[in-house]
Amino acid sequence: GYVDRATGRVASRDHGLSEFMTYRLAGTVPAPSLDFKGADGLPRTAVIVVQDGAGSGTFYALGVVSGADGGTQGSQLVPLGDRVIPYWMEFDPRHGVLSVSYLDRADNAPMTAEPTVRKHRRFRVEGRRLVEAR
Image 1: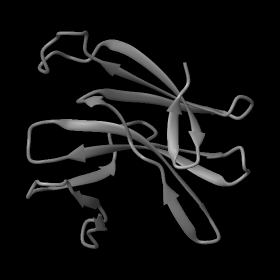
Image 2: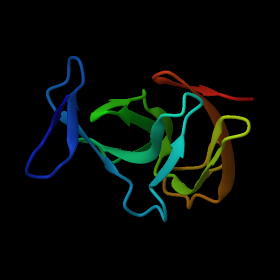
Image 3: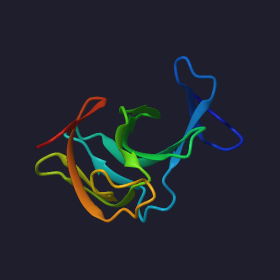
Image 4: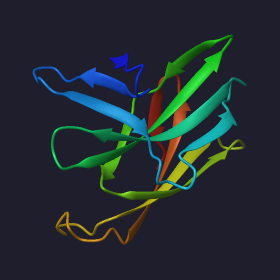
């Protein structure tokens, strides 16, 4: 991947595709990022990013960036869905769980339908991975 200096967006080339996918912070989300300290005491920032490509989809994902002493490291991105509406994030330091809530569509609903189904997912940060907590 690379950072486009003109736009500040991150892009990566998907294997076998000629188009670039771009990632940006979700600007329409009330709080597209959340700062917290991990179990190791290092600062972390949870981010909701949007992946734009050549198609009509707008895919939202959750990731965590951690860093210390000037270095940063990102987790893998966990897909939330296409054209969903994220509206809330929280970190519970007592249990070490990052939670995200968003609106999605009902199963089998067309992509043109308004997202109205509330979804809530919880994750533990394990190194560079986000592991879903059930």
